[in-house]
Image (cartoon, rainbow, N blue to C red; front, side):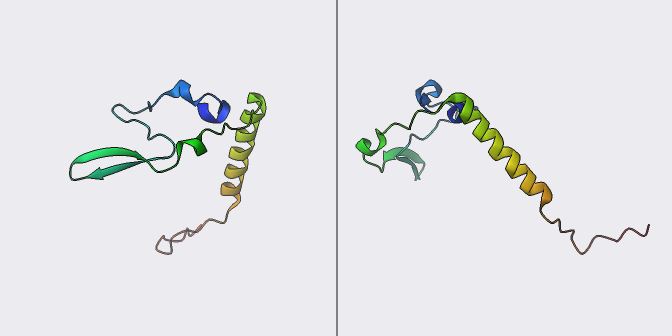
Length: 92
């Protein structure tokens, strides 16, 4: 959520996550697990990652995320619901 509200400062998050012992894999990198070992290796040229995201007003960014979430929930609530055929019908 912090990156959505303020994408120009990802370094504030470091490589941490909300989970103990779990670190983020940096952009342009892959985590390779092989024979009990792990390796983080780059797959994207560093120069292509240096392009900064365009500046976004934080208020508009938060409003955009809020609007997208409201629309996603609205779409989910208005979608047809399918009950499994094995459920007994309500006699009343």
